[in-house]
Image (cartoon, rainbow, N blue to C red; front, side):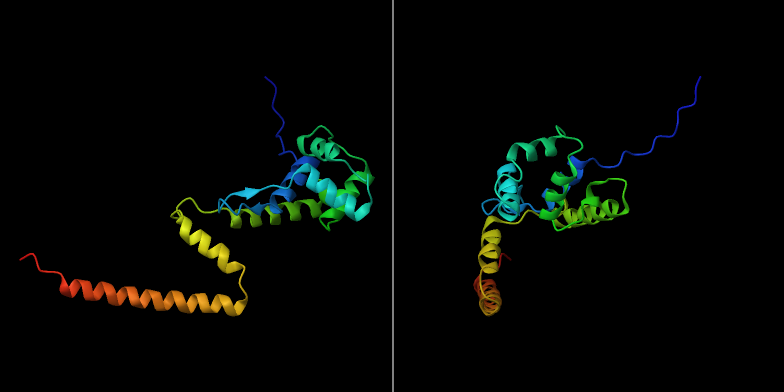
Length: 170
């Protein structure tokens, strides 16, 4: 019987770190609040090519990086990707202190974006109201708050009045 060496958890791969960073860039689906849309390989490549010149990277290279088809990209490719996130290239070295700190912070950020399981699902009308209100100026948002508070008072008065008018069941 041989003793099994204690296995250390594997550091995240280049693709793991890239996918985690991309999740942090996901935008909320305007039609389905709480659902997020990841950037496509083409969108990522276009953003990098816009910054660094046409042909700097292809969407196929991005796909291979994300899926593990390319496990260890060249320093030039890794630098392009890191620069697109305004991070040092060391972020993709899963063993580096930089990588560990960034991964931990991104995971914490993603946890804060995730709705809690115990939370009541938000009615669609509330989600639409919130989405619409976010597009208003700060002054417009304050007006919406005042209108909502006034409407709440009106409904409370209506409920109170209907309770007084309702016949008792004695």
